[in-house]
Length: 374
Image (tube, rainbow, N blue to C red):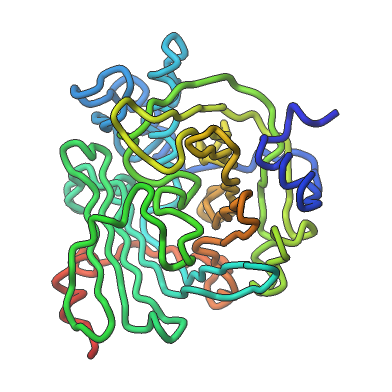
């Protein structure tokens, strides 16, 4: 009797693996500072897609800053609305600058292993209150991650720049490989390239629910409906990683599911484009604009993966922000968790350390090269 409110991939996990959903009363805890709401009001009348794709929105947007760019999706055209909603997801509020210690984990045949650990430095110039002071030029996110474990990754690091207009400013990435003492451009850190940090179970465009440019898909709004999604999952981050990871999913007693209104957006490959995930169906939370669950299909339109996002409530920010996500391969029966802030009790908010600013030089690949060790 709950099937209509449960994403297809979650239904498969219930039937195939015995996943259970503990459903709690709905709490609409999403919030932002007043200046963000002021910007959203301005964005509602000023944001637009770039000229290269004024309807489908595959190549980016302009005219917005410091808030959700398209707070009122244009439902008169499902293609327009679908892309607007996903650009909203790419532009969600989660602070301006913060540090977070993260780990990636993989579960194969019930064997749990930590495959990557590092300290992520995030700067979201899009949410600078003084765009000129922070050289805002369409940069949505700057990320620097020096890896701290396991042993084979110690000494490696990565920098990623992402923009609101990837047609004009494509995503850029650089990698520092341990032992080489040199920095290389890493154009492969995008789209459906498998992430080696989680043994290739997840692709780079599956981080955060969806990550990166929209250019390879056509995006269509299907409907808005009430869906059970993970929400306010602070309890999940109160235990260590090995406690949380079970054979096929996180311990259900640690995951809080709530009924929330979601935009349902379908992504299908644009003519001439390729991706190993031929179709995606996203359930996007109405309040945060964060993707909550993604159903992913292979080229034969068989259900391929479940992408599940576990947000957390941070009242002092304020906000309900991305915590981590899991990718379940429903065909090979293994899964991974991405960027989990496990065991990070040293920070005031348990896992995120919000700071006023991070120097731009931290995100400079030349600086990363100078800090390398042999």
